[in-house]
Length: 259
Image: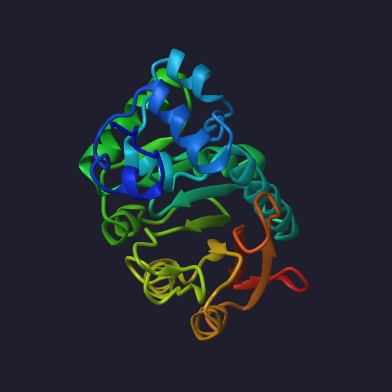
């Protein structure tokens, strides 16, 4: 007897990883995995809405993207910290842009003068760039590795650089131990170090996507790189299965301001 496949993380990151999903498949993934056919909301739109306007997602992007309810919460807390910096002009950079949905929300809510996303995977870049164009979203997506992209930024004219860091988790997430920030691809601390190596003389605000449970040593090693940090967990899912955020500053702190 034939049994329809379950549209879950394993299927979409496996044989459907690089396939463009139909609307039915996007909604089936939401239903099978989260009990909500509208789970994959991006760019402020439901799946029916963004699909009708010509946007498309690969299997891997549907799984890995930060959907609207989470992206908007992340952007809210990033914006609050950016306001504490007391700067006039902001640049938002996503080192691993994917769908660029988080970059979209951060750029909007933090009132960044511009948003730049870096995406090395050719298929993801092409589809995401087409999505942004079709939806009329004023973001710049570059087909570059994060190191190459950082070097290409040169000396930005903005006062504050907001850097979103969410590299692919790969096998870094285990339900028991949580997320090991040292096993993401690349390790989060390595990406943060690359940013401070190029732009360490500037005021930096880092936003690192986390899981509810994080391997303690990897978290401690990361927070040690910042002048100030704070951690948030967003209760959108069942307890123990929620995402979170680590905010960190370099060159300033909310208590002391720039300097």
